[in-house]
Length: 88
Image (cartoon, rainbow, N blue to C red; front, side):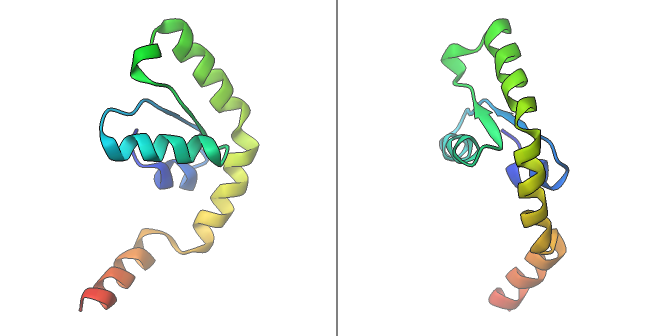
């Protein structure tokens, strides 16, 4: 599924095709907040992928809304500084 925060940062709706445990959680969260589509591997074929991409693209406005929220937290530099502060 890649990095959902990065996809939101760059205004990219996501089609999540999870392969590992944490990715299933991420895929469900992306779908729940309207920023992506969860496409189970068992349902993956050319037609289902095309439909998932169309649905994801239709959610671009929602991704733009979420982008503003994600960016308001400062991005990876702030996250790294916070981790260093907490672990330091």
